[in-house]
Image 1 (cartoon, one colour):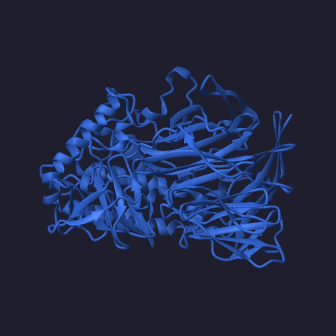
Image 2 (image 1 turned 180 degrees about the vertical axis):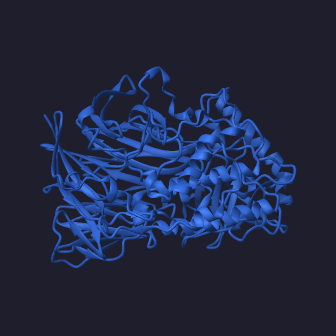
Image 3 (image 1 turned 90 degrees about the horizontal axis):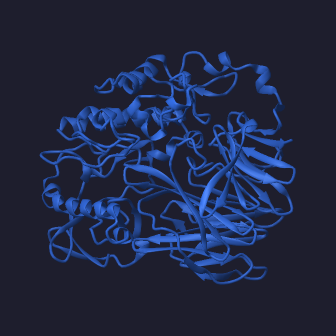
Length: 639
């Protein structure tokens, strides 16, 4: 994007610096103009994302046609944007034009330091909230007022989902206002997990918008988001396992069939809180929405009356009059340290308690398996509960690494290396799109991105080993080599590097990220890197796994819908072993191998089902497998 023109006076703005690109979705890119202003620029039919599709490709052609129609419509729709909307709606400030005078986007206030609501639907995010579940209540009370305010102005959100709601200081901000439905303009985009099934074509294999949006569809999406943030699962998550295998409904079609997590043939997600932690009246209302198609304005009193508290006995959080955990859990089962199931022996080697949290775990050269945990303002390493290795608050966005003699804590642009009997060493590092400190470790070396370079710590001086794109690069280190990617606008590369050498091989042919990146991680085994990225692709969230060897060749690839029951339904919960990948699912651990460029599940370890979930972390070490959650460490031994 070279030059654009902002406002009535057509002020020229140069956007040739890719580091100014702070966000990219399926329809638009977001560029930072000033500390307080960003510009949302719609992708035209000639955008690089669409050029990546082969000539004549039907999907590429449909994207190009939609982009052309969208820009054409906005020539009239954006100038007619309604006034007087709720203050938490991030509205267009000025229009943005191309050289010919065509509207190609708009400017809007920059909500700095905010994060998408999507990221709050996890146990770790909840624990980092000072008010716990009551902070979620505050967010949704404010969100309720915003939705009512929009409807009062005859505006329907339409594509209402947890990626277009930002949260800062427990206050929601609604973005992507250009897609709102008002006047004669209809909202034509949707997100599968949040679209009202009553507006979809029931004959399809997945939700597809088939009818115009109505106000009640916003309240349906509101209920989905409330459930996800309260319980860490959506209404149609879980695994559908009826006795008759022929009666199973595919994950993507569950909402069309109204098969909810409360149905008797659905295995409830292990990483989710039970429906029993919410007030009965709220649960019954949600089930009437998702099972019985109740459509109306969500009753404000149902969320206003929710009060979360921590049980004085077990310490767990709930929103009931009496603790549901204490009344349903068997004390003997809770205290059991060694459990045998079939050929699997599980030993609980660490548990940190209700007011603490395991924040990182890894295999450390020279030390074997190790972990870092936090409690009451102190960080502890391994099972040591007496000697803190660091003090400080636990903040969202922090990253950690463990080395044989050091601990690294990173927040914002500072990665602090803490070693015994030595002064702390501070590395200034890049932030990936202002969110993630970019660094990793290998053996006794620290690697980090800064100011367009990939750096490595040295015995006498730090050294640069290659050039990367500032603020748009992520990378990970294995034992012998590392993998990373840089992506901004038309610039999209993958690269590998030798952890003991210099130079980058940036010829890795990974597919373009044709949507908003939500998460990314990488697992290493032997000479392979298993790179998994979560992105918003069209109307759904997708996990893509790309396997790259140390020479930079792509040897296999696979995609799956986020939340599915398969091994790729989650980006996390995996580890590399030999030339294979082990993945934890709610059905147990599965083994994934490469077969002629495909990733194939070759074995399922059924006896591990009791001990793992898709929300845990796996680490393969000599003598067994370590399973880590936010609260405990298990050691699994098979045979």
